[in-house]
Length: 110
Length: 111
Image (cartoon, rainbow over all chains, first blue to last red; front, top):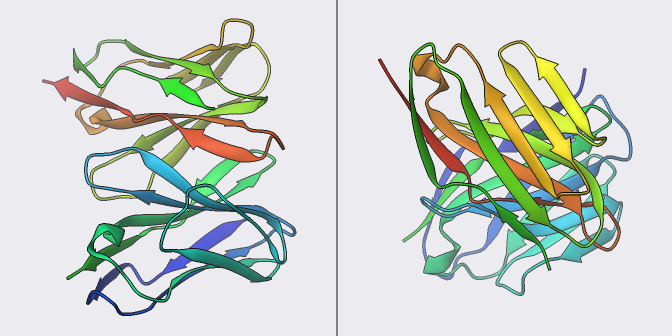
C-alpha cells in the first residue's frame, strides 16, 4: 500500500534562518505531489505542485521554493524565514483511489 | 480562478444525519474530494467523486453534480467523534492536476 512520510512533525526556527522540509512517498511511482500551508483557523493554501522530477508549479509568490530531486521526494525550502511563514505545512499526493496527506509539520518562526 | 464554497459552521446531535454542501467554480474539473480534519492533525481522506452520482462508504456518502458545480457530504448516525472540520477539495486548473480546497466546515456534534 502507499504511504507518505513527512518530517519533522514540529519545528521552531528563528527569523532569517533557512528551512528544509522533506516529503517522501512509498508504494507508488510518478505521483503528483503537493505542498500546502494552513494558517491557524484558515483553509489549505496550495503552495507548489509537481507532476515529476524537476517539474514544479508555484501557485503563490512567496518566500518559499520547492524541489523534486527524485520521483518520490518533494522538498520545501526557504533561504530566510519570515514570521509570516509560520503555519502547518502539509505534503500530499494523489493516487488512483484518492488523495492523501502526510502528518504535517507545524512550523513556528520566532 | 478557483472558487470553492462551503458553510463555515454546522451543529447536529448524536444519532442524527447532517449534510454538508459544497459548491465550486473551477477552470477544469478532474474530481472532487472530501476530507475530515481534527484540530491539530492532517486531513484524512473520506471520499472521491469524479462522475455524477452518489458514492457510499459506511456512514459517509458523497454526491456530485458536475453540471451544477455542487457536491454534498452526508454523515449518518452521527457520533461525538465526528466533530471536526470537513474540507471540500476540487482537482482542476489548466492542467487538471491542481487540488484546491474550500475553507472547511466546522461540525460540532452535541450529545
